[in-house]
Length: 258
Ligand code: 0WD
View 1 (cartoon, rainbow, N blue to C red):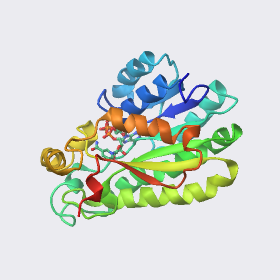
View 2: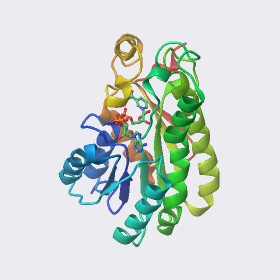
View 3: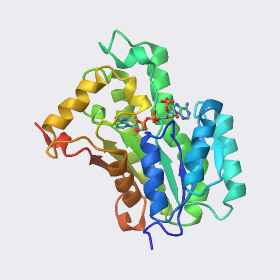
């Protein structure tokens, strides 16, 4: 029996087979969880439906996190499908305009890019937690998981405004953990090493980052979406019942380097 048997999980952030959220969905499915999915727009709908089909799920709902009405509609649709509540919320969503995540920090920066990066990459976690709070609390062992990156705490070349938004995301994890702990809901982040996905392709110099990690990380390789998926499944399971408000590195040890 898998360690997520009997759990229900909502997975956001699938844009392709390579998405980290896809690795998380596969691991959670393997461990016995029942899944629901969201897609950002009509272009991604069939792709997400394909992934859902492979995990035996027919719950595929629209969600653009910049639209409050869609967040509310998602919560209502889930209430109808899962009236006894659900257990796991996976937030794997981030965005910044391309010119703001390449080159100089100030060069690509303006009010709009800053606001957009924070809105989509950090505020959306709190907004989804707020909208799904009663459903996660209903079963008493809720778990929320988001994805961060080392650029939240170190000034890394090119990552720029996304690093600032990830710092906000990690602080949001801690405040949510404090807020939701009394009702049994845990909130954690995985700080993943670099992985070639659609979102990563927008970051300046990404190929060099992959090479650098492969040459220097203690494990001498890059992480895979399977590595992140397995850690995510653990963190959202009852095996991790004592862990909340944490940022866990799944990066082949790269962050320990001086
Ligand atoms: O190296 C990497 N790939 C790392 C990614 C290292 C460490 C962390 N992460 C994080 C990302 O910052 C993100 O938070 O992992 C999370 C998932 O990212 P991913 O799997 O690398 O990227 P991708 O497969 O592109 O999925 C992210 C998706 C979007 O994809 P695109 O590429 O179409 O922007 O986030 C979704 C979208 O599907 N997304 C939205 N969803 C709802 N509403 C929105 C939105 N407004 N904007 C983006």
